[in-house]
Length: 171
Image (cartoon, rainbow, N blue to C red; front, side, top):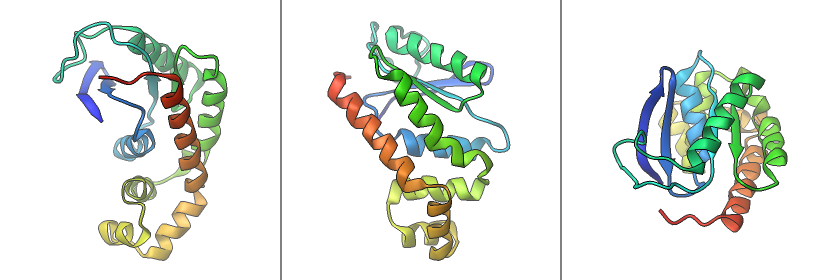
């Protein structure tokens, strides 16, 4: 759940605050589709927030979660990666390697293909996706398979489960 709405922070960067690590795949796919043909880089920081939670802005907030996210934005820019995550745990490197591999098939995806993937992440039903976007169910199935969506989703779910088991989320 998004607690603080997305705010522009540095020119072409924006940030938001979530209560827990749910929905990152759908969020990523929607942002990537919405920003095409421009690239996207997402740095996620999982950690404490040492200030009050402000629903309208994250500018007044601070803590390790924000520092970790900044570190990952810098690393994503340097490495040319699209999505990095940092926690205070030792598994960060393997998590980021999994994310790089999982997202690699999306490098040449079109806006419609990304919309299909994001909508399927939300609805989990090929017929509903086809109706909502205006494509055939066979096209939805082909896109899901071509971009290895089910494997991608499984990786994101395993990372989510690992984060839930190793962190307290109590916003």
